[in-house]
Image 1 (tube, rainbow, N blue to C red):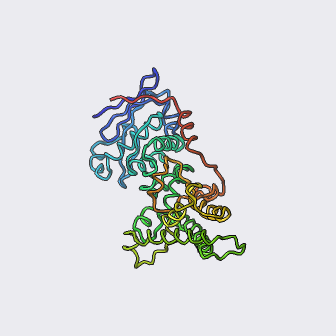
Image 2 (image 1 turned 180 degrees about the vertical axis):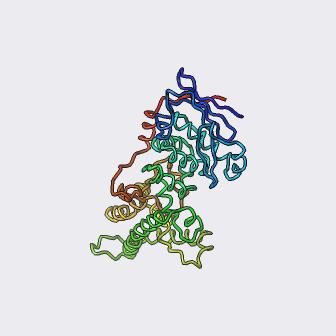
Image 3 (image 1 turned 45 degrees about the vertical axis):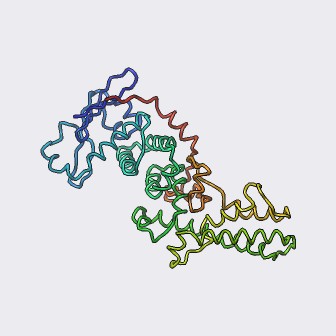
Length: 362
């Protein structure tokens, strides 16, 4: 068996855990500090403790005292479990309880880790750990973009506002009920929440486009539009439509009647044409420029917080201004109680306060 020893200051390990052919020598004090299960079942007066993995007939597994496990029986049912995945997830679980860093490269181990945290009553420690270890990823923003639907469900179990909000921005932006993963990855309540926010945000866009078209045509109640300003706006709108209509996406999906004003690149093209951050403006009338900026700036807002650099933002073909209130977070909506969100900085602070972690050694 492969053995992994965790160190906790000068204390010697007093708990022996055998999980699918791997041995973890750990400290009951570290387990009891963050897990309801271990607080209930590890009696300090009965150390050392010896537990092993026991698979049930339905394919679920948990820790049981080693002397109660029938090895022959386990050999007959162990095929029902992805032992490599579960062992990897259990190692991450222990690292989370010890406050150690680890890499999250895919969602399967993450989902398995969160399932263990829920089973062993260690959601708070694992929530802090997962937030911290995703934050430290150099490609965190792209990770959220690729795995947003699965992260939403993980964040819901962990009750993590920061993880949920980050994934939610991407999920609403990528909303498409025709995609198989939209239905396969999400529970009905999450699908409803995403659909509602997508619809509310889309309702803002035709109004913005209507005002831009009025300004481009010179039709204004205050008669403050200079003909030169209207001409520039017409050029910006024309370029925006041309760039989008010339894209492969539009050509491939034209039969599905894609709505041009639901696409972020179209509005970004107009905004960047003359109005970005007050630079390179050739609009003659200051009031016109201010009105264009006021119309478009809310749509350009970036509500991502996990390493969302400007060059990354431009790669996303959807809007990033999506917001969700504390009241609408699934765990708050379910019980009618509001838990305020934590920021990226809070995640680092929580992790540092979690534990003076031990060290794992081969």
